[in-house]
Picture (cartoon, rainbow, N blue to C red):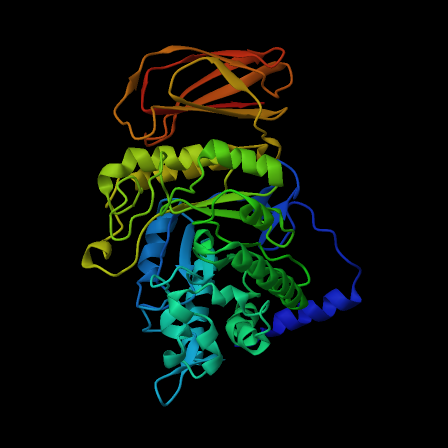
Length: 493
C-alpha cells in the first residue's frame, strides 16, 4: 500500500515551506528530546510518554484478537505492545510472497498481509497503543534461529541465501555486505524498504532492527562485519524514512540481548542513528538492572528500553528451561512483582516498558485478559500517577534517602517536582513497613513550601494521604503512613 494522499501533500509542503523547528507539544508521533544528555526523553505527539504493558506478540501473523486485547489494555491504562513483523514457525500471514512452487520470494510481497497490517496498526494507533516492532528475527545463533524458515535456500527462491548459514552458523546474515555479497544484502534488506513505505505514515511505531541478534555467539571478525551491515543499513533506513516523513526522525534501536558489555554493545549504544537503547531482559546473563540502565543513560545520553521483564538477579540462559524469575502477565500470583518492576523502571526514567507475554504457541497462553491478574488495577494507578507529573522533562537523578523505609529507594527531582519510591526487596511481597519519618536530602528542588501526595500503588484510588513539606537546601522531612510492599511520594509546587 502506497502512501496516503495527505502524506504526499505533506512531502510537497515540506519542500516549499521554511523548515519548522518542532517544540514540545508539536512533534508528530514518537520523538527523542534532549538527545545526548542524561535527560533524554521520549514524547508522543509532543507530550512525555509512558508506554508499558504486555506484548501482543503474534498479532500480525496469527489470528490474534487484537481488538479484545486493546479494549482490555485501554481500560487499564496499558498502552504498549511488542510484535514481530514475521516469524519462522507461525506463518498463517506472511509479508513475503509465496510462489507457486511453495518457496518464498524475499523481494516480493503478499499484499493480503499488508492489507491486514493496515487494519491492525491504525486501530492500535487510534487507541493510543505504542508498537515496538521487531524486524529481523534472531540474526545468528545456530539451530535456534527464527529466520531460517524464510532464509534457508531450500525455502526461498534465492540461491544467494546459502551464504547465510553454512554449518548452522548464521553470522553470515550480518556478513553479506562486508564479504562482497551485495546481491544477497539487497535481498535481505528489501523487507526494510517495504516496511518503511508501509509504516512511515503511522505515529505509534518504534523500530527494533533485530530481536536477539546473538552477538555473544559471534567472533571478532563477524562483529566487525556486522558493524558494516548496520552502518549502511541504519543510514539508508533513516534517509528513506525521512524522504517520506521529513517532519520526523524514526525512533530506531537494536536489541542488545545476548550482547555482553564491551566494544560491540558500546558501538551500538553510541551510534547516532540508534537513538534508543534496547536491552532484552529474559534470556541470559547480560541483562541490565535499573542502576546499570541509569548509568548507561548518563553515559550515552539516550532513552533506555527494558525488553522482556526480568527481576534481578538474572540467570544464564539454558534452552528449554523455564526462567523462574521472568515476570509474565499470565502468572496472576506475580502481581506485586510486576507492579514493583514497572515502578522501578519508571524511576529509572524508562518510558517504554515491556512485560513479558509469550507467544500463542500453547493453549495456556490464550487466556482471557480481563480480571486475569489484579496487576491490571495497579496498572491503572500507574497511569493515573503519570498524568499527575508536572515537570517530567527536568526530573533528574538527584536526591537521596537519608532516613526512610524499604530495601529499594529511588529518587527523582527537578527544581519544581520530586518523586520518591520505596519498596520491599525484589522478589518479596506482603512486607509491612511501619509509619515513620522520611528524610530526603540533595534534592534539586528550590527552597520553599510544597504540596505532597503519598500514593499507595496497589490501592484503587491511588492517593492515600495529602500533606505538605518545607524544602531547605535540598532537604525535606515527611511523615509516612504504614504501608505494605511499596509506596510513592510525590512533591510538587
